[in-house]
Image (cartoon, rainbow, N blue to C red; front, side):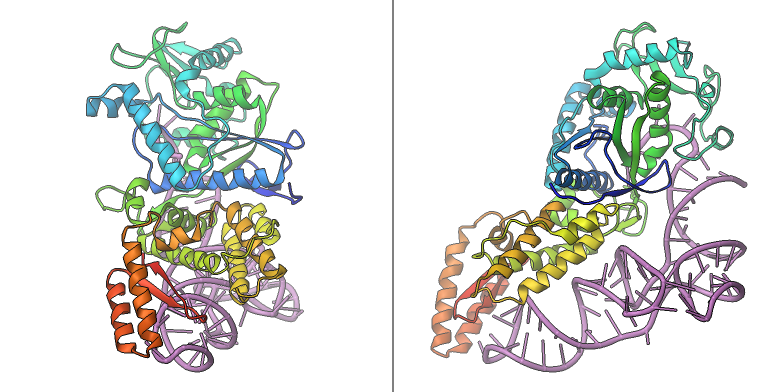
Length: 463
RNA sequence: GGCCCGGUGGCAGAGUGGCUAUGCAGAGGAUUGCAAAUCCUUGUACGUCGGUUCGAUUCCGGCCCGGGCCUCCA
């Protein structure tokens, strides 16, 4: 544990606030997870990386952090996709959930404390609806149950939208069973082919928003610290969660800090399948290491818009090569167990990862100025800070040797070593023509040689 | 129409009322048989027009440009 003041931009307060958990030493955080109807794209990935950074920061500062990230596995997009593919809904959600977990792990994200599924919490959702009806905040109409927005005086406070503006700007036709255009669905009827559960209002399924209200209170309690998601969730999703939770339980306040990450464009434009800039995480992983994706995302502050590009990925990959090159150079030095204070301070300041990366680069430069053949305390300290600062960002956690030579040791490695030995022999015989011939031949195979002052030769694979 | 964000050097991208990050690319140098890697040096940028100020990229206002949200998209 380290003592540092954390400040976070709170969407509800529209300003940066100093963070203090409700319970000293124990932080409770909820982030909206994926709706599992398709593999995640890089925009989704950004959100998961951002909240993973927040999770890592909180873990570094507080003894206990409970991080809940839900899996929404009941949704009309899921139904549509399953029908389109002709697969059972359960199969689609199971498979997509597994894919999601793979992609999230490839991006270097830690596994949350709890990953609850919506379909395991239908009973809790039904109970919340009952409470809302009992308190006069919801009504039944034509088999649906709707939240009665006009019964909540400060509805819209999170997003700063007032009801008149909402109604005026509504782009969709108002369903005839709504009392008020702003009312939203808590429960809706299901046909035989749609997933459904028995309820006091007939066979049906929950509306969006409801699962997060039900699951957050179950796992984190009616008052908890942080709730987050993408900026687009501010309205209507989080606004409606607040309405459900606070009206369902007026004695409690729900989340205390609201954290939202900014949007992402891709190659200068909004991601779109027709433009060809729609990047699924799994597709990008075919071309780049997951860590490069992560770094490319962290180079921009989380609340800023980011234009995600393959050129940016290439740059991120180069930076990582450089970091791992340094760690490799000092592989024989045992890193000191230290905290990278400046990196931590940067991340603690509303997750300023670009600034944290600057400090990481400074550490790298200082370390590179040291002599690896004269290990000393300063080197151990610097290396310790570099590793610890990297770990706070979920970076530089791999074996430098594996990074440089490709994760899978190839059967060619022996042949490469043999050629290097031949080249060393040629060099000591001053047969530079032969030495260069061997090096060029290796370059063609994507092998870069690095001669060291002591006469040995190191090698790495080009990206 | 309403609400809300941005516009920083070739690119990416922090930050600050005066000391002009950082990375990539470029230039020069050191090192090297030549390379690679690394180190050092080098680039006075903050949309525009006004205002406040001794001084503004940083604060305030107008304008221009770009983006987001306004009922199920992270």
